[in-house]
Image (cartoon, rainbow, N blue to C red; front, side, top):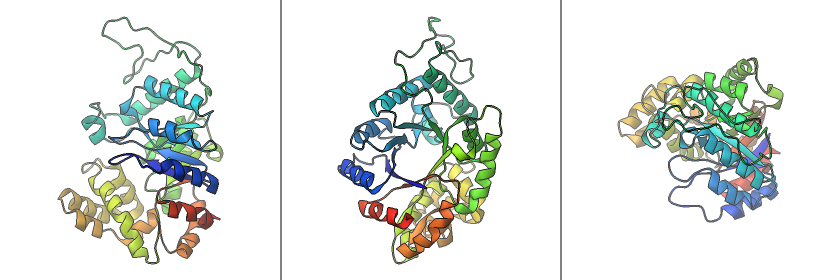
Length: 341
């Protein structure tokens, strides 16, 4: 299992020490750096800037939100960044959720699987550069139907450095995970638990078995963020993660339309997830946070003293995960390689 580091997205402004941090973790053996975007800083610009300072690290987006850019715009950015980095770029894509897609981007959220399939297919056609790109789709028709009627099929002026530039998909539900196995080169889980490994292996196997699948499990990448908090007291360590988990389970989406809620419920915490969501949506965030049991945290994170984390790591290494993404202060990032060893 390889190690990657999350550079995330910004809050008020850019972290001033990120270049120093990345240069140090590069020397520590971290193989990749991953940026994200929500509705603030974008994922591509920081990756280009920071990535120029760490020449041996893979540069990935986890994730670029599909509704933020047309497939052609995303393909242009991917081709550009892959050239500038010497072939180190990984394009991580995701549909996000209806709150962001419809509220921030002003785009329809309906049929996310169909939209994803079309989006990836168009990017692959642009990367192949075999001919001017046309696409007869329901969501991203090329050329655009209507308007002036003057639209014409075009081919990228730039020759891609890699026609097979890797594309990873963020996915949480079994249908989305199967789609990632079918059409992509890698998958980003979120709130993954080793206890759910068989569930996800089955979903991936369904995708690999489909006609046209590009991979098998042996050459497919699974890049997973895993929260790690070192503290002699596991409960105190869990307290660091509880607010984020409460936000995602309780507040990232409405009732019946929260994919993070579904992930936690499938782990066997459906009653607890309902309690978290009800409290959070009722404005009782502190109570929602306090209601999260330690066992739930320990299912999706590594918390406690170093010896406890070291004992639990083999369970994670036996899963489908190929790269573990770590986020935290430099003091934590310095310790994790030794724990992994």
